[in-house]
Amino acid sequence: MFKAWRARSAVGLVVATLALVASPATADVSLQPPGWDKDLRLAEAPDLNPDPHIVEINIEARVAPVELEPGKRVDAWTYNGGIPGPLVRVQVGDRLIVHFSNHLPMETTIHWHGLRVPIQMDGVPEVSQPPVPTGGTFTYDFVVPDAGLFWYHPHVMSAAQVGFGLYGALLVEDPADPVKVPDQTVLVLSDIGIDDHGALESPDSGGSTGMAFGREGNLVLVNGRVRPRIEARAGAPQRWRIVNAAKSRYFGIDLDGELITRIGGDGGFTEYPVESDTLVLAPGERADVIVVPRRAPGREIIVRTIPYNRGYGSVEFRSADDLLVIALAATPAYAGPPVPALLGARRTIEPISTAGATSVNIDFTIAQLGNGTFVYGVNGVPFATHHSIAAKPGETQVWTIVNKTKWSHPFHLHGFFFQVIDEKGQPVRPLEWKDTVNVPFEQTVRVVVQYDDRQGNWMFHCHILDHADGGLMGMLDLGVPHVDHSEHAR
Image (cartoon, rainbow, N blue to C red):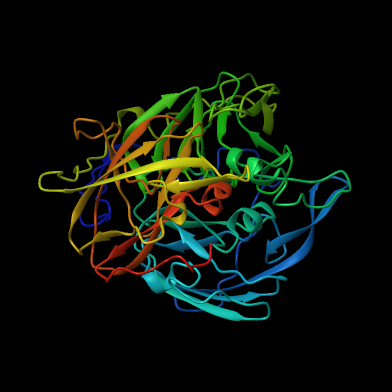
C-alpha cells in the first residue's frame, strides 16, 4: 500500500510528500547474509543519557595508531582513537550534547557540517567560539532540527587536521522515514597521505603550488579501511548513506555497470529519485542511495572511484581506484517484491521564490604573487577581509558564484540550506536542499537562500580545504554589524 510522508520543513519552506511501495513481509527483516557489513561497520558513540530524547556523548581528539589495511599502521589524528570518528546516531528533534576534549598537540574545534545549529555551536574559531587548546574542553549542546546524513570535522588548519584523520559521520534518523529498506550502512569516503617512512605526509607538501591544486592522499579509504568487503544477496536492495569527507578528492563512484538510485542528498530526500551508473560527490557532499546488485550469486562487484576532472592535474596520468568489494553470496537471488518501488516515488519541495531577492555576486579568484606563491580569494581578496556579505533575518538572497580559476570548487555555506537555480532563476531538477554544491572550473553556479533568525557571523568557503586555507573563504554577517574577520583563525 502507499504511504505518505510529510517532511520536516527546511527553513520553513518544505512541504514534502513521498509515496513509496514497501513489502510488509520484508520491511524489518534483513535480506542480506548474516554480518553482511561487518568489515566496514562504524563504531558508534555510546549514549550516556537515559532520556530518550537526549543523546549525550564524549568525543576525544587524540593521536592514536590506526590500521588502515593489514600490516599498515600509522599514528593518525583521531576522534576516540579511530578513523573515521564514531558514528553519532540521533533522531530528528533530539538534543545532542557532546563533551569534547582535545589531546592533540594543537588547538582545534568541531564544526557540524550541514546542521542548522545556533552560531555558538558552529565550531569556527574566534568567530563562534574560542579554539579548544591542548588539554582543553568544550561542550557542544544543540537540538538537531533536520533528518539526513551530516558530518563533523575541525575548523582549525582544516586541510591538515582533516587530512590527518579528523572526521566522522552524524546520522539524523526520522522515525517516520518511509524508505523500508531493512539493510542500511553509512559509508565515509576519504583518503590519507602516507610517506615512504609510513608516517603522515606533511600537510604543506608542494608548497603553494600544492595548495593551488588541492592535495590528495595516496590511500583511498572507506570507513577508514583500504578496499573493505561487504556481502550481498543478489537482487536484494541495500541503502547506502554516503559522505565525502576527503579534504580535496572528488569521488566518481562506479559499480561496474550496476545502477545507483539516488534518493537524497545533503538536506534529506530529493524531489524524485534518479537512476544512473555513476555518482559524483565533491568534498563535503552527501548522498542517500539504493543499490540492488544484479550479478549472479557467487560473483564479485568491484566498486571504484573513477577520476573526475576537477581541473588541471586532476585526471592526467591517473586511473580508477578500488573503493570496496561487493561479494554476492552463493545463495538464490532475492525474488520478492521491490522494497521499495522508488522510481515511482516523488517528494514535493516548494521552490524558494526569487521575487524581490537581494543579489549577491562573488568571484572565486586565484593570483600569483611576486614571490611566486599562489593565493586564492573571494572577489580578489584572500579570506574576503573587510568584504563580508550582509544579510537580515528573513531575507532571501540569490548568490551568483563565478569560478574564474582553473580548478573546481565545492561551495559550502555554514548554517543554512540553499537551492540551486539556473541562469533564468528556475530550480535545477531534481530540486533538493543543499549546503555544498560543486562550482566547476571557469563556470558559474547560482543558489538561492532564505535566512531565518539565527543571527551571527557565518562562514562560506571552498570545501577543497587546501583552497579554503589558501584564501578561498568569506563571511556572511547575518543581522550583525560588519565585523573585521582578518584575524580569525582558519
